Image (cartoon, rainbow, N blue to C red; front, top):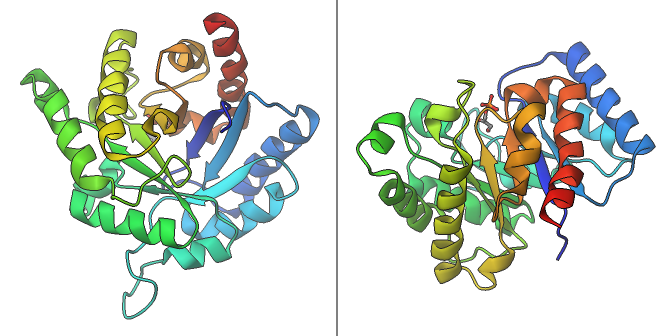
Length: 257
Ligand code: 13P
């Protein structure tokens, strides 16, 4: 199992053909010129851009993925996209249960669980997102909420090869407020312990932190115990900044050595 840090860019609903092409080309050039065993980079563009982005980065070490999939293989599901379709487009990963989907589309942990099974069955790696709201944290319920989301969202079929878990405290997403190193350390240790009860070889499961990660804080975050990578929103839209975040994996390695 690789110890490379997983650096995932979630472009969310941002980008048109031109700017996305440029961003993907800049990252592909960087990846060609600076091969690194310290990280694996994944780009998750909006669905209409996946094919183009995949085509641009396919001859590099950069992988690509999607931001959601449906739990069924095919059928009468207008507007939805199946895991098989994503696999067909060369995707390796799919983000599932992001808080924006849970909040804006009413996605439940049971649905996320079903989607993760569909993703795994199609040969994709499911990046399952969990995280508490500000109100839940203030009420002292962060551990309870995250533990329950983990229990209900991660399927029995999960293995370190087909599943990644991303801890994204909702109050830290797009706010510039990053969770403290102590909070991240605590929550990732909890997630590791709980996930290991359910997933065989859970010690190898990749756990990502997400929420206002940028070049300036990535080195510190990637150095925290049980942080195997980061899920980046806003800062993944600037190729130089995102590449800088990936470069910080080497910094993290040096610090923890
Ligand atoms: P920001 O990096 O913009 O805070 O977004 C985090 C996120 O939601 C990634 O999935």
